[in-house]
Every structure is written in C-alpha cells, then in structure tokens.
Image (cartoon, rainbow, N blue to C red):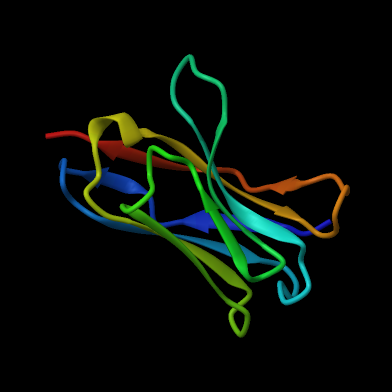
Amino acid sequence: QVQLVESGGGLVQPGGSLRLSCAASRSIFNIYLMGWYRQAPEKQRELVAVIISGREAKYADSVKGRFTISRDTAKNTVYLGMNSLKPEDTAVYYCTAVTSKGAMGSWGQGTQVTVSS
C-alpha cells in the first residue's frame, strides 16, 4: 500500500489552467500504475489519465489534448496539468496507485476542481 496526498485543486474560470499534484509516501519508480480519476456529483468515478510502468500514458477522450500527466520520481509525485478547462471538468479528482499488476489500488482523499465563471 502507498499513501497518496493530492493538492492543487480550486476554482478556475472556463479556459483556465490548473496543475494537480499527488505526493506518494514511498518511491514511485517501480509502481505499476499511477494516475487520476474524477467524480462529478451524481456520476460514477471515471478515468482521467494514468501512467503505466512509468512510460505509457493513457487519457480519457474528453481530456485528450488538454490534460497532461507526468511524474517526478525524485519527488515521488505525479502531476496532472489541465489546460482549456471546461465546466464539465468540474469534479473531485482522485489520485490512485497500483503497486503491481493485479494488486488493489490505493486512493488519495481527493481534491475539488470547480470550473465556473
């Protein structure tokens, strides 16, 4: 298991940008999967972006070209850069980590992102 702490959420106007951070309690170098999910009110949690084996990035179609996932192994942190934000991006964003393929995932407490004028 790994503990995860998200930060960087907030209120932003449509078209604006935010960068979310997810700090892990241990080295992320060999973690199989790390990434971001989000959950809007009365909707199911959905994948936003993940990095698999430190190399392969996958994105939801709705965020491709606008969001970028990255990681800094020296800081044990994963980031989600979000540009051209839309009101429909409003949600609680959760960081997740799966230490090895098939293992149970760990989750952070979530950070609120609100896109509104």
